[in-house]
Amino acid sequence: MTGYSEKDLHLAAAAGVRAPSLHNSQPWLFRLHDAAIEVLADPSRVLPVVDHDGWATRIACGAATYNARLALAAAGHPASVALHPAPGVLARLTPADPRPPTYAEQELHDAIPRRHSHRGPFWPDPVPAPVRVRLIAAARDEDGWLDLLVGTTAVNGFAEIAQSADRVLRRDTTYQAALASLRGEVPVSAGAPLAEPYDLLPQRLFNDRPRANGRDYEPEPLIGILGSPGNLPMDHTVAGQALQKVLLTAVASGLDTSMISQPIEVPAARDQLRRSLGRTGFPQIAVRLGYGTPGRPTPRRELTEVVRDFGPGPDRINGPGAGEGTGAESEA
Image (cartoon, rainbow, N blue to C red; front, side, top):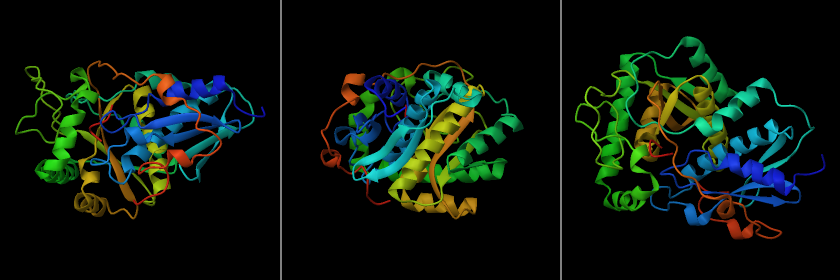
């Protein structure tokens, strides 16, 4: 196979748009350039107040890249991936040798349309040890790491960090105003029910829907901290791919997931979380895992909005989330 076609581009983009993103911002673009499929950040979808350095945008685009890879592999056209190969380009997918998809690739690809954030309470059933091992291996396969918090002490310690970070963000009036303007991006049906003072973990306020009687949040949730060895822009994109493989592995194993970003958004909380893990790497997102009731995915942008032709070079795509720079529960 000498190069990808427009058909391949649309196949990859249709899977890519099913990735998670902060506040359902969906900050990705896809294009065919020199017979390669490129993933770029959409400057019009970057959240400057909430995601001022582009961290969340790169996580989302990394997750979209992983979905695109799976779609191409499932079609028998697997990709070789180069991350940040040029300014403004987060990932470039070029054809590898054609082959049938592996069982693992097909299983994860089939999970893409079933993956969505579940912000409601989970049942208290424990996640079996073999599934936990699969989740950890999924992050490692994509050059990330996943620490699953075990025991009341570890979970309560994380909850204290998350609640503290949430209080910091709630006191930031500019941040809260930005969140208020984004509430329409997450449908009411996809939001968490109203928080109660005794809840262990913080919730974003996207609606005023009360929880059903007897449906409190699980007393000891399974929390995974996903991270990367470094904290440069490329590390964020790497973490996005690792995150998506973990999420799809969870779905394929019958689990539901939601994300908690507050401890990552507040630098002091992130540093505290990192020290609590005893890790030399950098936490990039927290994931709650468990067994929930059926939910519905959030709407996605049409392919006509995300598949574009920007000419011979990527310069017009540059922005705070695009390529180089410094360097959540509210995703969909």
